Amino acid sequence: MSRTTLYQKLVDSHTVKRIDEDTVLLYVDLHVMNEYTSPQAFSGLDARGRQVRRPAQQLAVVSHIIPTHAESPRVIRDAASLHQADNLARNCARSAIRLLDANDPQQGIEHIVTPELGLVRPGMVILCGDSHTTTYGALGALGFGIGTSEVEHVLATQTLVYRVARTMRIHVDGVLPFGTSSKDLIVWIIGRIGAQGARGYAVEFTGSIFETMSAEARMTLCNMTVEAGARAALIAPDDITFDYVRAHTAFPDAQWREALQAWRTLKTDDDAVYDAQFAFDASLLAPCVTWGTSPDQAMAIDALVPSPEDFDTVEGAASAKRALDYTGLTAHRPIAGTPIDRVFIGSCTNGRIEDLRTVAAIVAGKRVADGVRAMVVPGSGRVKRQAEEEGVARVLIEAGFEWREPGCSMCLAMNDDVLAEGERCASTTNRNFEGRQGRGGRTHLMSPAMAAAAAITGCITDVRKMGGTQ
Image (cartoon, rainbow, N blue to C red; front, side, top):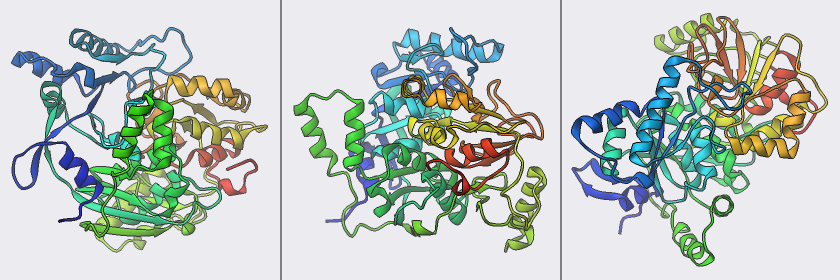
């Protein structure tokens, strides 16, 4: 009997039909939609006279294009954005699909809202027209992003023609050192294996580091694994997973016991073979920050900015030169101390309550530096309410942070929260591409703790040198 990986078990359990050696027809438990990747899919259904096959297994969220400044009710004033939101509302209404619109109390970023609502459970297959759907692997579900034509296919059939990925294991032992988090860990890993290091692979994370890592921290890790080119990211469900799912669902006791028994089998068999493997020692980790325009162009906060001459290939040297020209950094100089103009804390990577508590612990009793505009955008309405009830929001506001409404906000320039040309931002988001946060804007990815330190000091700062709790 062959020994199989967790990824293979999830694919096999959802295979409706094998098409060929590399391709299957995959059943989809849940399909999540947003306002910018679904319109063409619904138009395609209309053109073919098709209906949504299983409306109850869809969820739609407006998050990318909405403004996040304090306003009630929230009004989308940009004409193009309003058109997208209205289109989604019409399509959901006529297809009986649940929609979290701009003013729904549960509204937020799709990859934060969906687990909060108890819709993500171990063993599921979950798709969305967004690359960071890999987030759901943190709860033992197979999640990945799909294109618009694939969105149409899922809406019409609740299945997907799927090319099976190769498997990769990334093993991490140890514990996170002081001042570091799962965000530092994944940025460090991406920096080590490269932006294409996991291309074509479904990555499973294993190792002793997960014995104490929270479900929310795992979501951050799986969310950003796509930045190494991964097609999926998985962590085998354990008691930490089960506690999170139990807290966000309403299973009757008997049904819960039955589900738990099945979920405990969701793990890679002993002696199963992966197509590729990496191993890392967490004790070597330091707080990380990106210096370039790709998530793999990252460095420890106490290191020196690399030079193009430090790279072994012509392509690597050229990429480094272009990145340094764009970010305006000087090779062989410390990145610590680099002045910043903006701080953004939020996104589907780091907009959860755990992230905001970390920031509040660091900035309590301090003030945002003069000349710095610092924004905190909760990942969902539930996160916002919880932060306000716990007093986290009050601490942030008293420190001089803008307390915003939920949404994707400055993660990407699809709304009115954008960087001006030349502005430098300490950001908890997942991508630092040229223009990602605004044309000519310079983005440095880092953890919530590091972003909090930057806000208080006015420059990229080693959070380990700050007071407060990290």
